Length: 215
Ligand SMILES: [Cu+2]
Image (cartoon, rainbow, N blue to C red; front, side):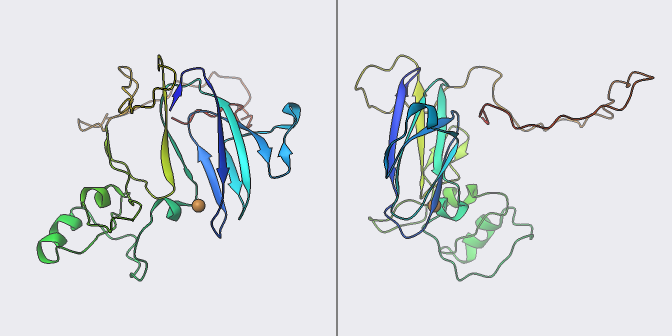
């Protein structure tokens, strides 16, 4: 958790035997410390992902200037999906809608990997040994949280009291700032405004944005 506007430092150490590209949504950060020591401020480079090699430590710092619940996770998708079985046939591409429910009637212990994301896994409530990290982290305001394992949430809130670490619950989005599925009639036609006549074709200037606000 971080109060809105607070400066945050997170130290990360990779004690595993593989690399982990650790990614933070909502803000961009600076890598301020390596295993060689603190990085001079002018040399701390901006990032949204820091690859943690085996045995490495890093410190990242940022100003928590965006209220919300921000995913903080390894960018290797299978590292946010453990623990899982792997000796399974590849069924990518089949229509799996409703398969978990139908399979559950004849094979209650079967676990179906949802074709359209991992949400169905979270809805299954599979039993796990007590010392197992949950594959799915729980249920959020939009349904099952589709990441677990090497995943957590950074909560940025306005008005947090100092040293108050109680969970403030899910972020309450301001009205008209969330997407929803349109279930009404599809529009019959969407016409683009006509291009001005007598002008040269537009060129596209592609450059990387200088911010990181994929919300
Ligand atoms: Cu990883």
